[in-house]
Length: 290
Image 1 (cartoon, rainbow, N blue to C red):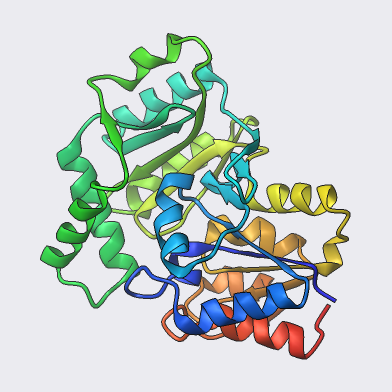
Image 2 (image 1 turned 180 degrees about the horizontal axis):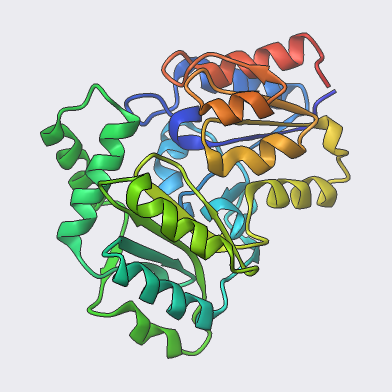
């Protein structure tokens, strides 16, 4: 019997309106009624993940920033996995040389060096996730997000690295030319044994500490709750979900997932637009897959 379910958010739990569908909400409640804990495992920080969950009336533990932070359902931090600051400085230098837009998630919030480039790159990322959006709609949605997601703009993020107790948890990068530019940089960064480089879209890469991965974080949470991994279920759609898809006893790839994730998952479900998470949860419980 499954005891713990961990779901990605973007492209997975969230639909094309960036909301959690009624069917998904009902399935999560059904799981809770069967004594199964539901949690999210997302590349978003907690502040960015909360609105959709609160709107759906879901209060749960969270794995954030790909596993760099874990919070309980009350919002208490359980642990963080920061990147060494010298490694951060070297990474930012490399990204600047390649003219790649980046922003940095820290224990003091999210930092960027350009609001204009942030809107430009995130709107392209959003348009990739939701192809039905026009360019203007994607820019409008990205701009609206800034209202509930505080971003601090500074001239040079490297100037912050000397602050006492300052921690960098994740670096997310974008480039309109996607793999052509990001691929070689990702390959070089991945040579650093301290780093883990993954992606949540065609035009981005995400950089974390090697130990900040969703799979590692889910395994840690399961161990804390004395839940064997064969009683853990994970659901995702993109490459930053791969580690948790590989480690879980029951794993589902979304219908809209990357082919590599579909090949790694034990089961397939419908797309995020068709409430694939809810359908996977109901199937897993009713068929007793674990």
